[in-house]
Length: 244
Image 1 (cartoon, one colour):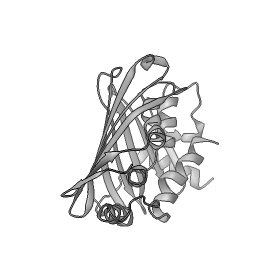
Image 2 (spheres, rainbow, N blue to C red):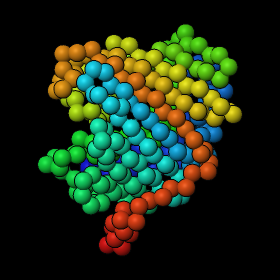
Image 3 (cartoon, rainbow, N blue to C red):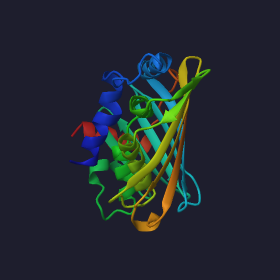
C-alpha cells in the first residue's frame, strides 16, 4: 500500500467522520472524553509537537501542523535543522524535502527523506492519538483539576512510539517498551497538552543497544479557529493532480 493510501484514511476521513475510540474507565474520564470529542467536532486546530529522544538525538524533533476539515492539512517536521513539509486537500497528498513539491506516492526508497515522508504518511491526527492514549490507560490513573495522568499499556505505547523512533532513523525490529506514562491537561474543557514519556530498548541502527527515552509534548491551539495556508507551490501540484 502506498504512503498516500495510508495517510488519507488516518488524517482526513477518520478525523472528519469517526467518533472517539471506545473508552476504558469512561466514568472517571468523562470530562476528558467530552473534551476530545469537542476537539474533533471543532473541525480545525493547530498543534506543536516536540519529540525529545535521549540518548541519540541532540535536538528535539519538531512537528508543526494545522488542520481544517474543509481546507485541508499542512504539516512541517524539522529534525536537526532539516525539514520536510506535507500538505493534503481533497484526497491529494503532496510533500517537499530539499526539492520541489510532488505527490507523496512518487517518493521512493532512493530519496534522502524517504523515512521521514513515510513517518508523516503513517501519522494520525493528534486528537486520534489522545483517544488512543485514553483508551489504553491502565487502572490507577490519577485525575486532579483538569489533569489526567497514568500508565499506558505497553502494546499501545509501542504502537504510538514506533513512529517517533522511525522519524529519528532507528530500525524498529525487536523493539521492547519498558514503561510508558502519559498526562493530558484540559483548559476550558478542551485538550490543551499531551505529554507522553516512553522508555524502550532493543532498537537497531543509531539507537541500538541502549535504553532510549522518548518524551512527546503536544500542545493544541486555535481550536475551531485554524485557517490552513497551503503553500502556493503545493497547491499547484494538488490542482494539477485533480484535473488529470
